[in-house]
Image 1: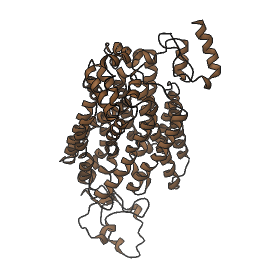
Image 2: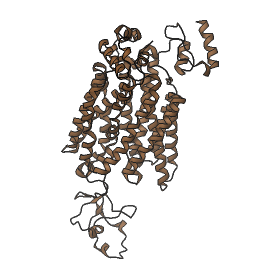
Image 3: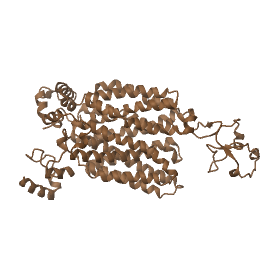
Image 4: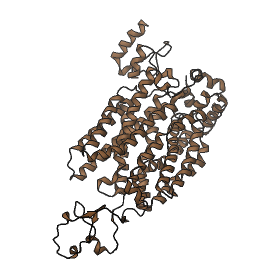
Length: 563
């Protein structure tokens, strides 16, 4: 008996779980904005060198055309005015005329953006600082040890509530930044709150839902992030001013902060931190909301302890990040998940953070990139339920790698096909993200789940920091970024094959639950559809599905008789 049985007794996935999951998932509509905001806040408007006069008809005597011959060059101007170019039939060869840098600054058009950090700070554009905020944004997500350490000490709910407030205050403050450097500092600080919202939100959802509903709930709640990408495109198109956009996507966190006090703390965490009375109150509250009031008198502290006796014994030990690598089972899980999280984020943000390269409206591309996630996540839902987590994770990574590699061989003039393949690649990386968020929460035991989530998702932030830097390799060899992104996905897909399956398996509560104890459990570690011995060697696990593995069952039966 475990905590999962108690959840079934108080209503399973009832009214409380519906409200709980919906309220925690709603902020996902704006978490996409936080992660992809740089596409619009630091977008580079169409621009050219400023000249002493601003009459349109005089531009071509000061500004040379770009390589296409259809637009004005962005960063060059003639050293001397070319008056002869004003003639209607001028045949002057402009390619041999002397040019110079934009010593008088730039003139930015307002067809796509009314104001961005680039147009307001030409010094940032000149020095390349406009691209700095991408890794700075990701670095602030990488520095998230405070989030999972605090959540271990103060609980998931408390840190989640604080993260909403921190993001609201610091996010709105960044909209008022007087300089670009100040803006990056506020983005760095607010990013720690983004990590707190994502990590603690996932854990709090997983720990209050039943085993059989985890796949559907995990996948469907990720659609909030998908729709958030399209919401971002609509807001950016409507506002077109980076300060207004920043304010609009951060201010709603005050609302999330206000209603987050309704959440119940994880009963698992409360019991493991010697707060059984509080855990009992939370369970009674859930039972009452779910219409199971008759269970209030039946569930007592003694009943709660009897269901979680093994977990309570394990919780008497203090766990640190080193415990993620101390034992063979945890070490295998952590190393494989590090590779999967890094590569998924690496490829995802490599595609999603450079929308202007596609040559079409940045707003349209954002909507398309968001829309492709819908069929991708439905696909993930199907294979997660039928093929299991491990196969789904590997399939998504291998497919995304194959599409990224295929794009290398498409000619640059076939822009439509290249954009289509990029969308498909982004769709599979999005499906990989959906899978790994659910998978990680199921792999790590309760006593160290929050630490594990924080640890491996830090690798994702490192991947998102590295992704924009790899784009610079395009100047060395155009195919090199795609080779790096695709190769990383292939490597991570191989690592995913060594993870244990968790389909229809109850959440582990202790480190011993994920450690193979004998020959039978080693086989279960690789595939849960075969029967396995429990850790104490006194019986067969309920998780076995004998009809699907008759050959392995015969092998294991012989092994059981020998034991």
